[in-house]
Amino acid sequence: MTWQDTLAEAERLWDEARHHDALQCVDRAALVGESGRYHAALLRGDILLDLGDPVGALTSYESIAEPDTPDPRVDAARGIALFELARFPEADNALRSALRGDPELGEAHFTLGLLYELLGNGREVEHFRLARHLDPERYAPAPQLGREEFERCIQDAVRELPAGVARALVGFGMGVQELPHPVDLRESSARISPRCLGLLVNTNASRSSPSSTAEEVEPVVVLFKRNLERATTSRDHLVAEIKLTILHEIGHALGLDEHEPLR
Image (tube, rainbow, N blue to C red; front, side, top):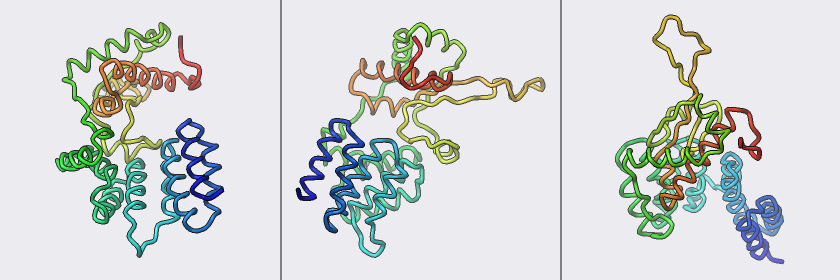
């Protein structure tokens, strides 16, 4: 079997969500010549990104990067992994380098748009437009709801929560932000993806009160409106994703296993 056949099999397994089997195929392909190693490293990085491991993905991409030889495909892949790691200046450099070499890399344009939107520098519109032009189906614009309608979606999601989660939610605040804050992403002790849908944070409920103590904190489930809108395709889908995000964050707060949600 050629390395091309082996990587085709890896992609099939990846499509079936058999990530670890796919990675084994990738490893076999990497042993078959320099071309096999190059393409296997790219696919390995893509699968690791899908698994939520941008550190491993970046290591895979950088294993085939040649500092003195520009490679738009590798630069774009590196830029996406660096963006996920909140290493924003490095991501910016890698993505712009990729687009200098190949201006038609839709995912590079889209990720650069996400980066500039997060940084609030106003330069995201052109990159989102170019990504849509290059791949209209994949990068179709996500509808933006007004805040009142988004709040109604949250209310609908909360009404669908299991009784145990609804009871637990009484002890939590609920907040909405357009996007995660870049400083929070960079300074968090745990890695947070810039594309995350929600986050549980603790805020000092009585910071200005002389009688407050370090223990007086209010846990707040923060939902990131733009990321949720981008991750969904309809209002019903949005409500379902909000529900799942709340379940996920409340579960973590209560120390529940990922596969044992409250009922």
